[in-house]
Image (tube, rainbow, N blue to C red; front, side, top):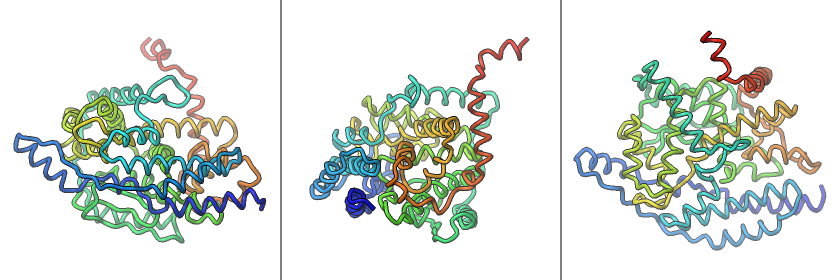
Length: 414
């Protein structure tokens, strides 16, 4: 091991000690009672915008340590770049949490997650335009086939049992607890050692597959693989800069396994539009009405609006932009895999699961002798294990992209 690498790995360990227990979503989340109070006021005919009080945080010591790592890793070495960018994203994240409810919160959120006006990689199309396309497509499909919302109600106990059984088939040596939580605000949340499900919730037939491939076989699995890394231990961190890739990879997993439905794709797209509305000044009540106008239930509309104002100001002007990354991440993931297939680098699909990283990291961390310290992933999701099937999907996608749908009118309407 070179002296340079040894010094970088010391900084890697220091970065883990600074950031390992820092959980953004836990720090920006609203209390569960906020939903009950708002829904009650809504039904009474006198809706009141939630009043949220955030605790004050002072992270000066951690920010100083992160700044030191940022300065010491500003070199071209690929592991130094990985540490540099990871430390910088935590620097922005700590600043974001220091400014909950204030404009600086939004500024740092955009630094981390981007915003809806950003362009989709490889195109001149904004995420807003992409979202509008998927919403219009879903609405046309719904008008034609009158799909509506699924009426099935699978209880959390049943979903838990199914997830436990399926998880053990892939993650064989590391324990993952599937637990039901009375205090969980989102429908589900994945960590390294457990996946939590919200109690008292109706799950649809799509939810099991989505939770399995999205939460367990991406978020939890990459965290476990990162935790098993012997040298570059910061690969275990769910660092803010990896959020777009993580959510994009997880949503892409839903796509290639046939687990995503058009309704979910529409909900993801609606959140992009709503985030843009909030950035332009819309308050919580206006965003809530936007979701109800788009056929979401009272509770689902609250949940969707809450996501956008977590850590922000429900009266408007301070916004959490994380929901910008799902659609952008999905499109970037699809483009990345197609690029990898075309350039004979589909091996990068496995690298992505070695820990929490970005698509760019996967390329960078395979380009230098020192990066051979990265251990291959201990676990892979079934759709990655089935490499030939993934290759067939991507090869077909690459060729199908050459076919212009508008040119088919003369074929099928002749």
